Image (cartoon, rainbow, N blue to C red):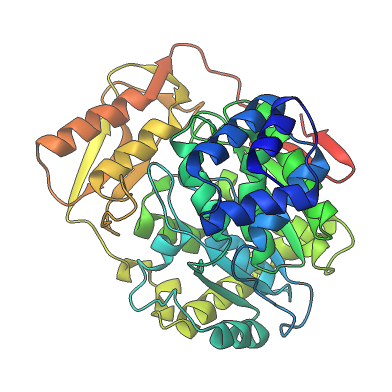
Length: 443
């Protein structure tokens, strides 16, 4: 078998076999297939696409390239949740303790933020003492005892994906949906969950800008999960504006705690209940989504979800009392109000621009090795559809200092808001549900 033959086969529209794809992945990881040949193959995939069988085979080959987490010692149906990334997306902090509180075990590996999207691990580390690195044995035992653990991703989880993604990033092949789908799902499969719920973002703050693209990606990922024997469902949610009001690590933890107290923003609460309901159904704790939502809503109202969060934080070395007193989280010394210059209604918010502004304050990383400031970020006071008057506050910056750089960030935040005299029609938060049976639009 030669790499050049497989490149030509895909270039001409052929379908590669599982053994051929394994040959490519293994050869690339071991250094036997050079970058230039793998680049040519990735470009052929970008133009020619892949069948569902090919995408599943590629995903398994990448999942098998490194560590495989065996969650068999954990009792019950283990359900994982993954978001494709967005601004203000703190759903894991809420959904994980929420579903764990009704007996769905959550053994989750999460990542750090890069660029305008935040990372769950960074958010958790804003809690004093919280440990995101646990031994495999401690991870397993905590899930068995508590029903929940969230740790950083293993450095050797799907290493083929890490190497291939770096190549795609510099060869113009990032946009290939089969390659995106296999990238996400290879890590999820290697992480060992029995079932997977995907939160696929769409809009200005998401990687996929259109609903059609997002549905295509969701269908590809659900097909992979189904093909390899993992129950998989995807929720497509709006990211034309940030989720909730808070952007930034400690600020998002505070908003998550408020949501677990039953006092969170409507959009964030709705999405968490929907994601959690699908996890609950796949975890065998409810017959249908509506029954699951009712059950989860009661866990928010009776304090059980918040108590599970408190126990989870304490179990991983953090200060569990933060669940009752979020003021113990890091606080930025400077607060800067960003004022509106026009009267009208908020017509649109550029979510990516706000995410970048938060990163410039220090809440995110421009490069993977950059340090982050847990305290800083942005809290929005106006969202799409809200009425606004000139001089009224659109958003509040939480900053380390008040200088020229912060003034520039404030202007960027102001520029992210589009104000119009006419009240806009609001786009639904939940747009589509994708399962093995197909796509159902909620509109």
